[in-house]
Image (tube, rainbow, N blue to C red; front, side, top):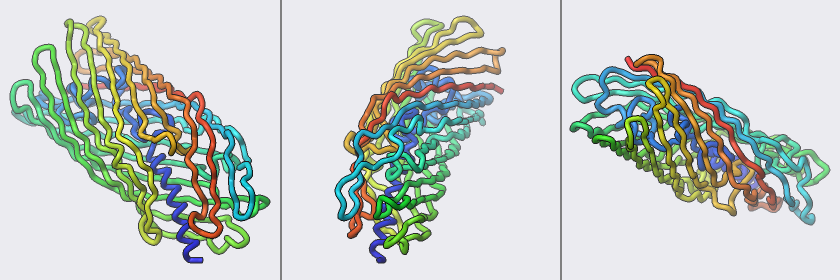
Length: 437
């Protein structure tokens, strides 16, 4: 029976696999995998095409060198509303209980908009502190989202509630080493909390489902490095943001099992460990006329760090995720219509790290296009209001990651997942302000 408990909890760990998904704040949402890139309204308005090469506190998340050579101070704040839309539907998912023929999983056959709407705040501040040296601080939320499937959904054995919250605190320093050339460095201190749940099948289809839930939290640290070069109409930027290995300490609870499985209902303290991807950002801005600037960027994401979800004692196991490295490409423009009005726009192509044969209901992520538009109104020289709109369209994709309850035991119960995510798209509205002092 002890082995059965351990295997069950291993599956509870598979719930953390939602961490692979959920940490995957990605369910068809804002950027590939579980990364939320919406950390600046100005950036959103041009599809994140110029940030690594742009200057100002609002670009700190992308490049700590963005405040190099700053005279005086600057600050920015933004609030972004994210409204995902999708149907996640069953095609022919089967459950194979011990000694029984494969049977339809039953339940509600379609879940409308399982990804919750969200509001994402961010802010930054920076100030020059002497000859060519600047300090800054950015507070962002790079991985945040919630997905919910009802206890009667066809996807209940794969996912019910998946909730991730992070906050990233990034103190930064930058130095202008020569006219137009700056370097910067930052520490990224992240707080992560997660809650993951799903149903567990009892051995008889006549009995109600049991459940399992994992929750945890923790603080972890990474770093960012960057450089910028500005000469005449040309600005170049490059940065590296490290991977961060997160360790969440918490508990896993199994409840509602009946009959021969009833003895396995328990709550145990445990931990989960996973690694978020590194990023290499490269970009350029070119002012082709006094009022028109073109932007372009390329980002490489190190998602292959997200190979496994590791569960600590007493589970001591790992769940494969096998994400792949990806690319993101963006192009955009900023156009000054007058001394008080600037408009901008852009387009971004972002690839999913989820392998096609391993997509689950927690993270039905797929390749996406991001179309963006934005504007800025200047209230004098020291205060600006930014607004932006993004429309993301994602590919329809199969949901096909097979799983099993009580894996490796005599009561192993495979769930042969066969579903689809249809018409996924996202509306994003952002409003922000910038001030110089």
